[in-house]
Amino acid sequence: MSQATRLPNFGLRTKTSLFRQDFEVEDVNPIRTLVLPLQYKHGLLLWLNGHLILNEGFDGLSPESLPTDALAALRSDNLFEERDLSHAIPFLVSGKNVLAAEVHTSINQILMAFVAELNGNFARPPGVHQLSSEAAVISWRTLKPKQATIAYGLTPNMNHRITLQDARVEPEIAIIHLHPGQTYYWQVTLEGPEGIGTSSMSTFQTPDPKQDKVSFAVIGDSGLGTLGQYDVANQIRQADPDHGRHCLPITGSGASGSTVLQHLHAGPEGNAHLPIHRQRLNSQIDLQPCTRSSVDPRETQAPAQTPCPASDR
Image 1: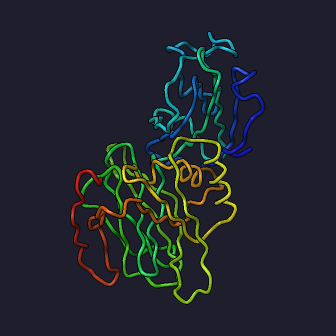
Image 2: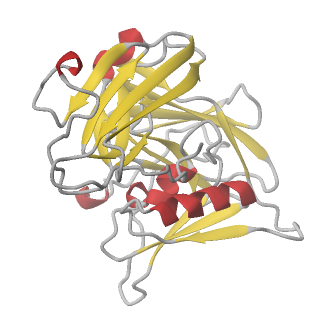
Image 3: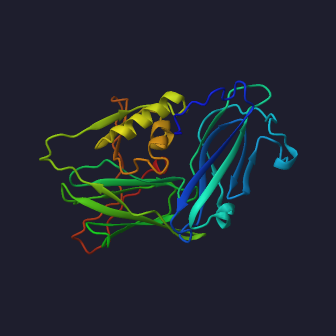
């Protein structure tokens, strides 16, 4: 079952649906925060390894006092939200974990929805954007501003570093002076009041100008979470293109507002390595990006930084 699976009678003749998902954690020690991006209607009970970690839509009533077919309070929207579940970190274990959910329909509306993604240290895990034969941009999102360092290199030793000069929630860091047709290893380290957390080590490959053929996917969606958007994400995942271009409306909120990208990158089969190039659709307005943090691996001095406008952070 994937995120694009339509369940029979989901929200029609059934008032409650139950889900279980096994997942592996290689090492719980680097996890400092736990974030749940989710979309649901209308009541949600969530357990991690048998411990209740989220209870919404029932005015604080305990699961023991709720019948299985209990009706929840009506929710007015169907957009992605984020929950800080860092209090549940003690329930995580290295190795196999189980996330269980109970989703309820409401008194006034029979429609139901449920999509969830549990992320360690990041609200949106780091991803590669704007990849060229000589440069790449890496971005992510956290719930609170964090100091960050990117390590990268041609070997797992990752002997190059870029450090943010200020704490940010949604930074974008440019890596320049790369070599075409090469595989680079990279990893993000965060530092905040909770301590030091890291992403998993990932790779990207710079395009080779001499390459005969390049495949790419063009993505554009409202972020409202329709079944069609989940289907598109699955099709892109199966095609495994070299690049993706995400077309945004002029008022869009960036890649974090795209349901397709949310589900394209989610789960153990996600395409987190897929480079995404973002482009807004109003060509009459100059939207040149501000200068990002960048570094030349051949330089020994710290990279110069030009701050972005507050609205761009």
